[in-house]
Length: 470
Image (cartoon, rainbow, N blue to C red):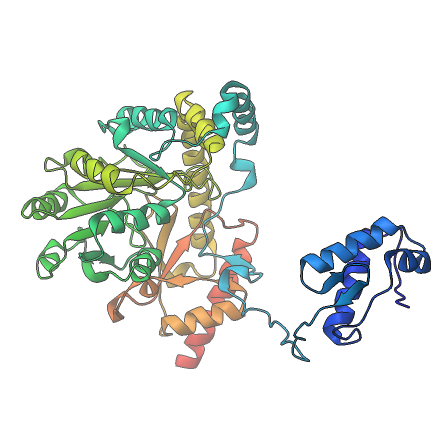
């Protein structure tokens, strides 16, 4: 008779426990193929459980093929291939940089929970649920909720000087999604030019789509149009308002060169990534390249992940009219990838002026934090070994180190001290010796209380190197 320890007050139901025990006996060979099991009544009496519990367990095992029932004869063990005697134990994945418990992380940008407008956001979400009601359960249009597209267009007109038809706006769950869509729209057969140095994720997206990409060098004005003309590129990806990681703002002359390049041949396009242009601490935001485009060759992209929170996976792109028609014809079968709940909530956040106020508050917070970080650097033991570069915009700046160590040595020794850092050389497709010893400081996620100790550790690394070098 089958005898199993069943926990009658456990968190797992009795039938589930019985099902698991019998299944384990079958797979282990303790119950052989063709062996007859006790009747439901006999097993129920033996285990002091209800007949319905045994019946439910047997029926589940029959449904999965472990048992079969023969009319008027009972229940029998089915022929089941037994698993290998030892299944390999899953090994833990290697630790990645972002998962490690760093003392201080100068690579990852994050937001302080105190800076997120939880009260306002939750109130707007409740209003959205009450007002939209059944509309929230319906699918949104392929290009996103009309209310959100209208709110974005109004914001761009008022604060960025961009005249945009809401129909030209396409909403997506992060810029990564939008880039995948653009590659399909523009074609995998085209050659894509990227800034060098540049944001590594963009290169990874192009690689994953198996498109040809060409790194184009930069000078003090940004991406070199002279180099661009030496290659067969048809699409160029740029961040002219505040380049990552150099911080360069592209001047009007270089912008005009790029627009002229795009207008010279059919099929050329510029992808303008305006990802953190809102955080400019001196003067007005830089006008967009899209606003100066007379040939309809600029595709504009931006995201709310940087300005509100990384978890707000809402980005958008603006297509020129002729590309919008092509997108609608070929790709409007794709559903919008952003929840309607979040779209309607963000629409309210924008249309009620709350986004503008949030941005103003965050600019002040980040400006103060940047000043504090820079002040700590200038007061630290590191002060006479560094030069601060590009500090007027965005959520990062550069720090040139006076050292003979290679960038890899600096990175490794910093990691040994619990410091996660990235060097400017990490962002180049090919090594640039003249761009060595420059640290990229992403400061939004820095814990100011830990910064003095972190700077002391970094200064110690450079001091030890100096002693050895002497």
